[in-house]
Image 1: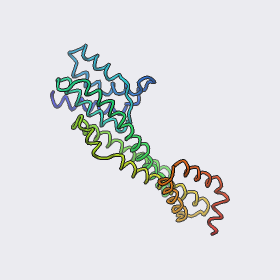
Image 2: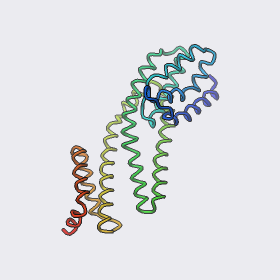
Image 3: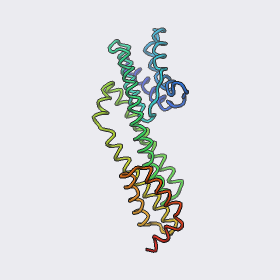
Image 4: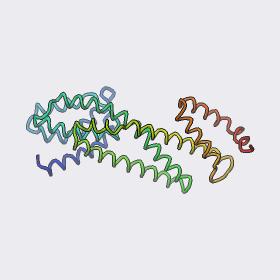
Length: 253
């Protein structure tokens, strides 16, 4: 296949990958979005094989659901594998098992890293800038940081998947992503509790910086890591509800 032609097809696929979730359906979730993303490749590979073209379209209309941020990693590998399948180098069942395995794996990893990891971290940075400078500046910081991470991950992930194909499974496993996810969870727990406790203390002592607020939040954040999260959150809400009577007494000590 001509490299210039391949480059154009890959760019179209990367662009379409941003619209994975624009075609949801209740039966097969993101399947139409996946098919839409791969159509430029299928159109090229099977333009002279009408029956095979519709068979491949039907294959990618099967149930599909994964995390949209980490989806390009899998997408790049699927593109390479589909090219190999068209050349007779691999069988369809290899692509099918890879697709089923990876969509659940990347879904779990992506939800942990994206929704529970980098998005809260970006939000903390935005809130901090919002407090120090202005709410508008904080919003801009949040959007820039989070989307910079998102764009880098999508593009870098796609080319990693395209380069390694099915071997990307072993690469992800060797990186031990869940260990890093645990670190992100710990950092987010401490930061979130510290930030909100600081804001609560700030509202009572009317000081720009409150060591008591940050320290209290740090302790609560550690509790959230050590003890069951539901228990700590319930305890924290009780403190919030009784705050108008509790915080002034604490500050007098």
